[in-house]
Image (cartoon, rainbow, N blue to C red; front, top):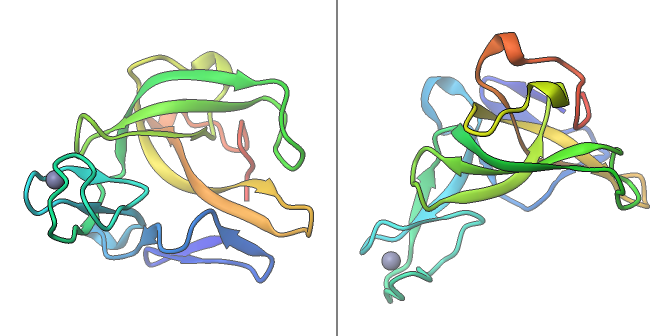
Length: 160
Ligand SMILES: [Zn+2]
């Protein structure tokens, strides 16, 4: 897995967690998550929904490129993991900057457990989060510290 000009390039044995969750349509040629937004109430859904669950508008939602920035709300360290996952990964709840009600559950990556702090600023990065029984590797959205001094490559999650 690599990112070239904001485009996610997968190896033949890699798949994304869901289809069409990443887009290179973001600012500065970077990779972003692709959500959907209600044209009536503005609610942002990710994973994306075709229809708004908040106001139940009958109009279809539209694509919305998310800012990659998020804030750490809470986390736990998974000591007992399902087969295929790395032991001791850090599972986090993060609040996306785009919408204070948009909270995602994802792994933290590239950080030492002792550097994790509630409220810290994070940025989205795709990473391999698990390997399937058939050998395929699953690439999903993870979050790493926005502060480069807190980034510790290869810690938590899996390095590519
Ligand atoms: Zn709505």
